[in-house]
Length: 221
Image (cartoon, rainbow, N blue to C red; front, side, top):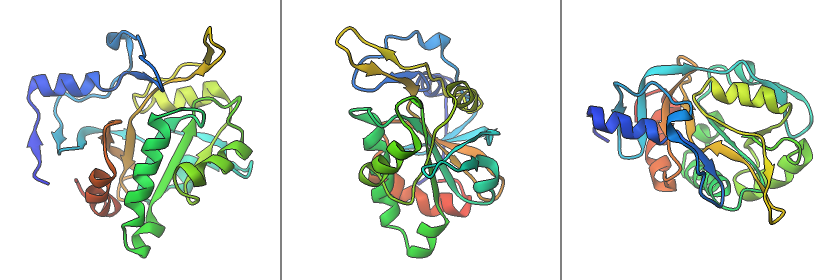
């Protein structure tokens, strides 16, 4: 797709997109209080926002679906990587995002599928144990996706490094539990290991299918 230059208004709109999302409900948050990326001078395709100031990959060490220690930087070094923060009990945004990425991945040549890393970091670690993530990911997305869980404060700090805000899950009056989290997918380049492309929750499987071949090469979509 042809790269476009964001106007100031468009940049502000992109920043506003980085607010917290309540899966299955209205977040009710003040966007001005949510952490955002530096989007003052970015390129943007139909679905992708290419960041002029890429994110450094978080120094995040958690537990994978087998309960083993997983060092995000080491495990994904030199690999095209998509990272998303969400939770398995999310009724809408999280499973849809994982499904869209999985559909797009299956459209890739086998060699490219093997290169791509998709990492799902839970925002609800108390319920999302390694075992729960291992059961959920194959049905919501793809068995090859990596699920990570661990200490909530560690997860929150890692998300913050990517401009993604999350809040501790809270119990609602009806007994349901809501996890507030930013609903962005960050793509990391295999060339620099920097997070240089951002996708919002409205990104479709077709959008990912069009962009993944370039992301796998570390190119701008």
